[in-house]
Length: 168
Image: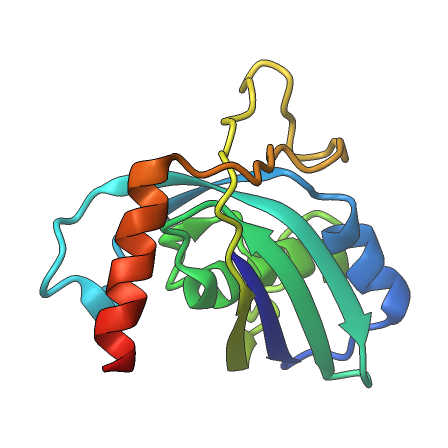
């Protein structure tokens, strides 16, 4: 899925900080525990997800946008604010490291929140999981997604019949 997000940072940021900590982090392997907001209806497990592509855009020292592509099932809000440390790494944790010279000694950290989230598209292609031996969170290889324009006949008929039901 492809998303557009408008985000707020409690600490002043620069375009260089955003680019340094976020732009070169794709694909990024993240571990997400079940978010607090859905914990009452989902089992508490850790899910492995991928942020395939991130493009930050600086607005001013506290505001920025993110355009990102993720593997299915990624909790995007929690990827931004970290969900009390239940999503690792998160945009908040990456920016905190950047603004504390990597020491993490700033006890307040960088509070980062998402104020707007829009789904901008869904790829119906095949996702190929990256080889974990080739991924480090410091690398910046090309996104690992394989697109296909071919749907089998059963999927096409199923999609058409669902659309007809919705339209009627």
